Amino acid sequence: MAKLIEMTQLSPTMTEGTIVKWIKKEGDSVSPGEVLAEVETDKAVMEMEAYESGVLLKIVEGEGAKLKVGQGLAIIGKPGEDITSLLAQAKASASATNIAHAAEPPAQVLKPQVTTEPLQTPVTPPDTKAKEPEPKKESQTNEQRGGMRVLASPLAKSIAVEYGADLHQIIGTGPEGRITKKDVLDSLSSKKSGSGSATFSQSTPKDEIIALGGMRKTIAKRLKDSKLNLPHFYLNADINARKLETFRAELNEFREKNLPETTPKVSVNDIIIKAVASALRLNPKVNASWQEDSIIQYGRVDVGVAVSLDGGLLTPVIRNTDQKSIFQISSEVKELAKKARDRKLKPEEFSNGTFTISNLGMYGISRFTAIINEPESAILAVGAIEEKPVVEHGTVVAGKVLSLMLSCDHRVIDGAVGAEFLKTLRALLENPALLSGV
Image 1 (tube, rainbow, N blue to C red):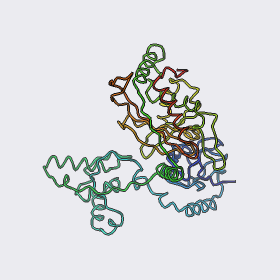
Image 2 (image 1 turned 135 degrees about the vertical axis):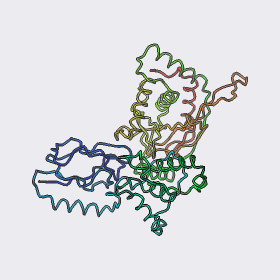
Image 3 (image 1 turned 180 degrees about the horizontal axis):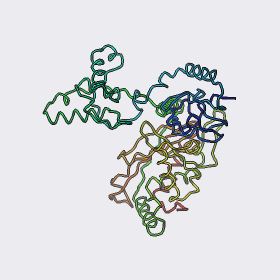
Image 4 (image 1 turned 120 degrees about the vertical axis):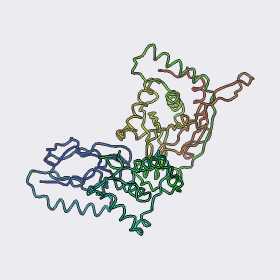
């Protein structure tokens, strides 16, 4: 008997997913455990597996469709079965979820990414654009010129209309040769430099509307809830990082002489992760979570590391961090960070951590405060190592200083408890040779 296959909840926080790619095609045989499609969740691109046996009779929702969890996307059954009622059920399911953009082609949606392009382009809001039929008509004429349709994004068409660019004269660099905003801007800039016209450069930048992706929506909700519901307080400590940098250089020298070439170089952040894990083991009250009627003090030490992505961030988790060497931590962090940027992390690789580290030192940030990643009770914000005068044995000398800021949930961690944790962490980072198991 044919069955309607629904969008599966692939991560704990997933409420909707976008079909990135269908692995199975209509007419393919399907067995339980086989991958049907790749789905982009709020966290990663994940594989959606089949739970039924049979033949993929119908793909109800194509690639690029965004569906709520539980919405029908395909039908599996025996060849020749009547699936009329299931198609009607899928249609009703889609109407009930009220996702109007599910069937829109990808080109109609502004990608939820932070663009690196300069915001030089005037963008007409939808309601204003609807009141200007003449430019819209010009766009249609422009793209149909010569009897051949031109593939271009709506934003690219809008810019072309405003500045009189001929889309037929522009080579598209997007998917399937689609003309993008950048292609039109590059063409206009080229013409400007050739003709000496200053019209384009004098245009006033206007707002650009960027659609929110599932990841950004989830991040926004979780951080808002954390900031509103958790009574944050902050503790700061400056670390003398001279020995820390020396220790890192010694580790990498040891690696070069004694370990395989595939072993990655150790970063300062790798050593900080190891030191944090050791400090958590020695200060278990910080390695805990609030549970309304109790506090869980974890026996495991699983440290998460914030990784920045286009459109948001993920926090891959190093399991049993305190039991791993710095070289093991270094290798695992780099592997998980790559999977995070490729949107290939599995739920078990970014959930259920006990503590999080957020490091912005590579951006030159001296110090900052971070919002706690619920249900954890603390997060460590790590700044850059900076050259500053320090006092050693009563004498002011040139030194290296690392600023740490600990955000704590006051329901779980009292000030003295957080201070003891930072005291332990400072001792380990200022004397990194104390870290064992490297």
